[in-house]
Image 1 (cartoon, helix red, strand yellow):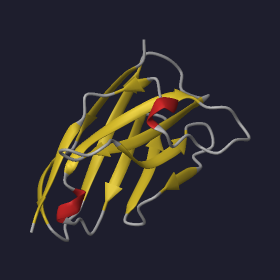
Image 2: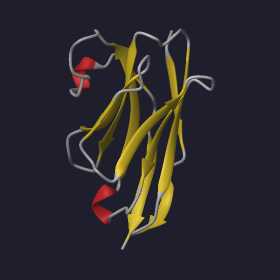
Image 3: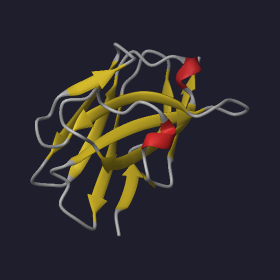
Image 4: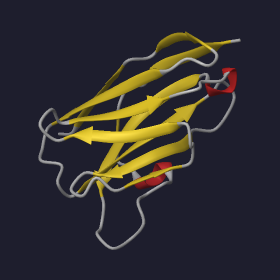
Length: 124
């Protein structure tokens, strides 16, 4: 069973940075894509970034955010810079098998496995 555990959230002032971590366990992830989503109060869960575990290729909709992975630690990271109050949300890590030769998955229903989320609050 895939398990994803996020950490690294917290309270930060606008303009600051945070690095979120997602520790993955339960199987080998070579054929997987890992993603980060976020959900603000009263809003839909939205895609932030994804990475293909095997190649490290990435896609992000936030230029200030960078996704990466450490194969040795089985961990995915989301580096968030120049944070804004509108980045306040619960951030979730997600994973699922991803076919080669197609774009990285970006819809939440393309991911079967989810972490419990970590709160990020950006104060103005």
